[in-house]
Every structure is written in structure tokens, then in C-alpha cells.
Image (cartoon, rainbow, N blue to C red; front, side):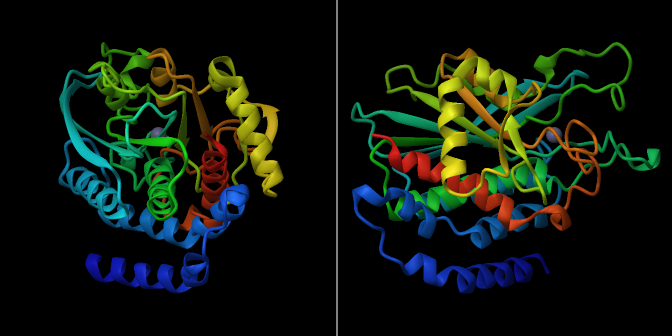
Length: 333
Ligand SMILES: [Zn+2]
């Protein structure tokens, strides 16, 4: 059933995007135009649906391993210069050991050229903390927006870079273990309540000093919860503190491309997310994340519930995020 569903989704994506995919990328002066024809929202949507079809991608699960292997295989197929799955051990807030798998790929030779890092988490939360029905709170969520959306957009950017390389090098990091952190709703008393119980894959990755002996990225862009229907992306405070100029450029790029209603150029909240640990490692990082939903003043109502499924994913939101990031990358040199 799963394989059939994926095949059908793929066929639909190919049909929907064939015109754009066949369009010849324009010359150097028109990279924004190339990004427009190269980023296919239906293809990104299919990548999101495939992840959700695997079941919850909780750290250490078969679905998470399959997801990591699938991401690595796709990146290889898109023409990444290198792709590898890095395993790491981490400890959850309740002491449970986790085996994490981060997927890292590089587009463009490490020959001294400038580099940009793009990242997303692909793991999903093992609990539905915010579920109204208490009986279902300890069950894992589908994670269509929280996990799969950022990964799907990044994979579509990778596909574009394989066909039409950027002038800068682009590193991609798909992290595990972002979303297994502490919350009052599900954690037993006496466990570690610190913010550092989140983003375990990113912490493990930068704990290995991964850029020793190679070119470190000038900055990083994190995509998290970038597929919600009706989503708005406000400027996130840790991003502004670490990389305000990159935030300025991203939000200006979005406005120029006609996504000014989605990328709201106003200060939002402060979110504990992977970008904090990237900035801490010396790479200024920006988080594109829906976190000012009008109904909650925070994350969308589906956040950390079983309703975080494909019904809430809108290709138009995936497109706004992916097209904007790809367009900025094509302007870099
Ligand atoms: Zn989450």
C-alpha cells in the first residue's frame, strides 16, 4: 500500500511539474527566474507525503532509519558531491539512550569557495503533548509539518541544485533527534527540564567539530514547520540576534518574489530550535518557522497533535519557503 501511494504521488508530481522542469535555466543574471522554474512545490509536497507514509520517524525507529536512508539516496541521485549518514549516541531527558542518524551532503567542491548551510530536522515527536484527548498524548505524531515539511523543501532544493548548480557551495544537514525534548505534559518528575534536551542531533553533529579542516559555511538557514496551510513566517528573535542581515535579505527576497504576505517583516517570538546550536558553533543561523499563529500566538493549533498530518500541508507554503531560499542561494557568490 505504501509503495503504491508513493508511486502515485510521484507520478502526479512529475506530471504537475514537467513544464517547469524542462524549462532551460536562464543565464547568470536571471537566477531568480531559474529558481522559479526549478523549485516544484508539488515535488516538495510528494517528498513530505513519502515521509509521512513511513509512519512516525521517532529516533531509533525503523521508520527513522528508512527515512535517513531514503534522504541519502535521493541526495546521491540529485548529484551531491558527497553524502553520508553519521550515527551518534545521545541521551533523552528521561535517560533513555537514543541512536541518532544525521544525514550530511555537500553540493559544490570544497575548493575554498564560499558555502551556505541549509538544515532541517526529519525526526518526529514521540508524543502528542498538545492533544486534547489525554489518552492519545503518549502516541507519536505524524509530523507532516513538524519534521517532514522542512525536509521535503530541502530535498526539492537539492534536486534544483543538482540540475542548476549555485556559484557557492551548499551544505545540507538533515538532523535527527530535534523533537524528543522535555515537556511538562509527558515527562515524569525528576527528569532533565533544560532546553538542551531538544535538538539532540544538531548538538551531536556540532560536537564532532565537523568543519575542522574544511570550509565552514558563512551562514545557515533552518527550515522547520514550513508547510502549514495559511502559515506566516515572522522574524524569529534568536535569528535576528545572530544573523539579522541574513534575515533582512531572506525577507526582502520573499517580498520581491511576491511572498510578502507569508514572510511577515515583523518581530515574532524566540524559538528553541536547531539554529541556536548552529549559531553557537560559530555559524550565524536563521530559522524560518511558523510560530505566530493568530489562534494561539505561538505554533499552529496542530502542533504536537495527531492533526499534524497531510491535511494541513499546503504546497503554496512549501513553495514560498523553498522558492525564497533557492532564489537567495542563486544570488550568492
Ligand atoms: Zn516539534
